[in-house]
Length: 217
Ligand code: GTB
Image (cartoon, rainbow, N blue to C red; front, side):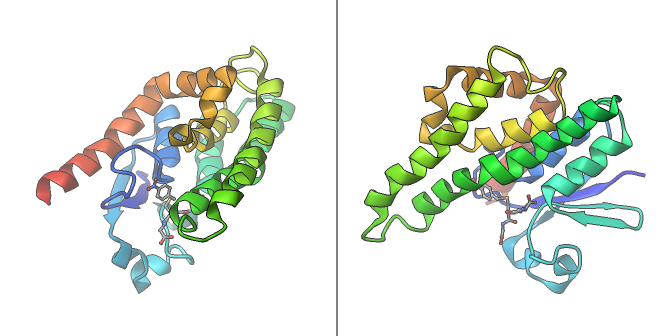
């Protein structure tokens, strides 16, 4: 059965692939699972039909037969569990790859989100300038640790896995901050992820949505 995911009808990132449908698209491309996309506006996301799929009125969602999922991590774990390509066969290696998915979402992404909130929602606050270096430093702590662990390996634990897919997806969100450039090994790690054919297909698909929406506007 072909799953349907949801994505922004008009992504605020203007096709940079920063919204979370991108990581789901990438996972589906990695395992070679064709998918359909239903585009939703901000109003549609908060309307009852979408709220029935996603209790928080967000994208992405995933529908496949009777299954409805929300949360990009849960969706990718489901996709990775259904077809080979994103999780190792060996049970221990599989558990470690899932551990890296959680690390990306629960340990590395939160300070990165904090930076985005600081830049987008708090920039007018009188304390914003003072707070920003603290936010940057909290991200640097994680980047220092992650880059030490990655060392000169290509991927976090052997072959490319859903853990790398999630970690690269999270780190990409740092690009505009310049922080990633302070860590050449992590910048190269992200570049390796982006160079994957599956990533390129996913990126092109979400960019085509943005371009079509721009052409109509
Ligand atoms: N924890 C959830 C998950 O991982 O699936 C978070 C889902 C989420 O934050 N979805 C966002 C959303 O639907 C889109 S991805 N927001 C609308 C709303 O909450 O009303 C977050 C996002 C949005 C925009 C950019 N950007 O413009 O760069 C980047 C990332």
